[in-house]
Figure 1 (cartoon, rainbow over the protein chains, first blue to last red):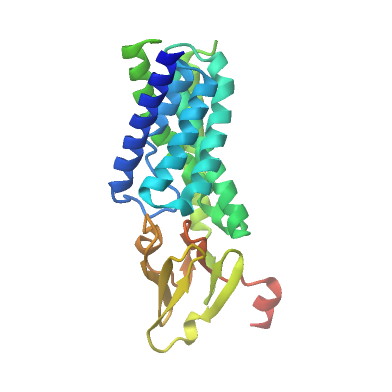
Figure 2: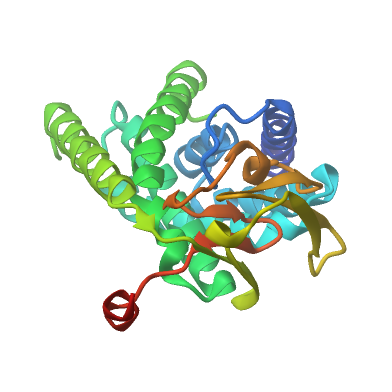
Amino acid sequence: MLKKLTTMAMLTAVALILFTVEAQIPTLVPIPGIKLGLANIITVYAIFALGPLEALGILLVRVFLGSVFSGAMVTLLYSLAGGLLCWLAMLLPRKILTKQQIWVCGVIGAVCHNLGQTMIAILLFQSLTVAVYLPLLMLSGIITGLFTGLCAQLLVNRLGNR
Amino acid sequence: MIRTRTWVIIIAAAAVVFALLSIWMLSAKQSGTIAEVIQDGVILREIDLSLVTREYSFTVEAPDGGFNIIRVQPGRICVSEADCPDLICVHQGWLNNQGSPIVCLPHRLMIRLKEVTAVDAVSH
């Protein structure tokens, strides 16, 4: 129990560092909502190595503290919606994926994160216009999700289920 | 268990579909000369870009205390300055009589071209 709590705390710290470092990288493409989502690596790893509830805890703390640290409380709603949908979407494939297919979870998570973000944007803007960027966000979710998913796969391979 | 190759095919197929969809959606651009500045679903200003003769700027305040400075020139409009975290609205550049909307997610601000309805099109 104590060991698990320590692992969770450490993973949260790592996710926060990734989140903060990423926020310093200037945006490469001027499309609203596109980002690399490095902290997704930790979410995918945690959901497989620790379990869904632990992953949710790490996710929520990271999203909240990340918004506080970056001083961008305005983006909290987007991160929260994206993060929660990403987590929900990862629950199902967790059962059907083999140990070598964990990277798929990264793709599904990233795509659903962007979907959740777009949905909350539609609500906040009270307009469907923001949805013109949805296909592009799905595509970027696949690409960034592949990257973060493969990183998580490597982590699981190297660290095992410790 | 689904084989890895199947997952690769599914993901590759989805990527192709979304790539085609984005090309389609972003090339089917809105066109018109009236730009709408919208925040939180409320239209703050409507500017007919074809009637602008000299450059001017105005500031839109965000609910959280932030700001976006919007610059208007003859035939085009952009966000020239903002204090949002990602500055994507600034990097999106100019919106002229054609193009995708400028969106500032943190400040819930959007600049888009007003859709010309069938009736308007006829009366023109």
